[in-house]
Image (cartoon, rainbow, N blue to C red; front, side, top):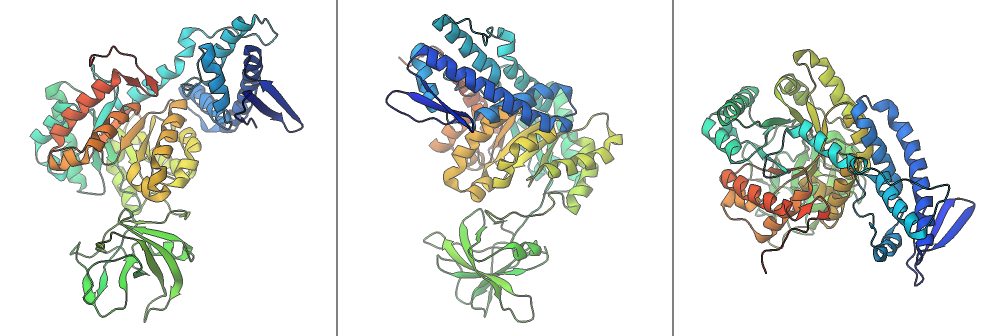
Length: 530
């Protein structure tokens, strides 16, 4: 493993073999050259070994070079290269900060320049990679993005995706305006509405495409496993949950309280609700965190065998976080279990039924609760069963919602993109609850980098311009978030009253930012403010 230490003499220690440790002085070009040559050799060797393990899962020849680059990027990022980066800058060389899409060509370009500086003609001499090879990764990312979302609009690289509301099944003009304003892809959430409604929405989309002359992809998002609260019982004279309160979590079937938003007062000691996937409760231990309603109520398990008359024992939770004003515990709110591995299939019986329609009509399938490569294989098998209905398979977008999905992301990419068109959605809502809000920005960056190394397009999702979409006025933070979304390949807006205005504003922001930023690279456009 290669490690770096920031010393005054800018030395870098390479532990390339267990029995050998070599130290190079980074203050000289000769030391830099030797360090980079050793690094390249290690990255190439480890990358090829990883790629060899993946090879049997890759059926698409066009994805082979992307998979190899991903393997080399993972090999590179096992090392802390900060001292090396700092040492390269005074020589006017690339600090490797944009290496994601082109690992070996980037290393080769720097090494070739250092050889000229050093006057070196060693046996390891490398020719500078041709320009088309150097930018091959960028071309592949663009190609894979076009396969997923279609051609980019003339004015911007980043696509816009919009979630359709129920009214889109009956209001053609709404769908037409959404596409005319700049939506390149629309999302149908299969957790809502009916198959008949979805088909009417799709008819409206295709009609609008014909009239406007603008293509628009259809993503149908499978509902997936929804772990939620059931009916709520509240102690008499208590309406809100506060920090320090207790909640009794029971087992229940997924029939939810019809009066969503109101608890039923009852002569009970604690707030009570139930988990709509009851077997999860058997996986929880004392001190396990349980989050309710997107983390608005955070709890920990204090008793896994709390006695309940005429029922199986429940879990007693203690509230560790809630608003000082208290939070209403409501039915049909999401339950999250950070740090708990949930051995559950991401495809429910409803999903399997919906796939009969989705596999026929969708250009892209949104896949919730993906955690392991086996989950990708499961959906692919189900699509194969329905492949007689169409000539080509729909693309898959994996929604990254858990820490397990993040850690398995390289394999998820290989299993999915190795067989069909593939993208990744950063589902920032659930992901933030699962990994902690303070880590969201960091993990979001790492997902963007990893996907760029695999030349896989990314969707930037959850609460983008939320205040604008719902209320007509964006917050300052939302505008900055929308601007930063330019580093992804697609940005998703949710449904709301002001969705048309939001599309126009997002289109303008993305177009402006593209003149200044391309992925991680600043674009030095002439400044007009001074």
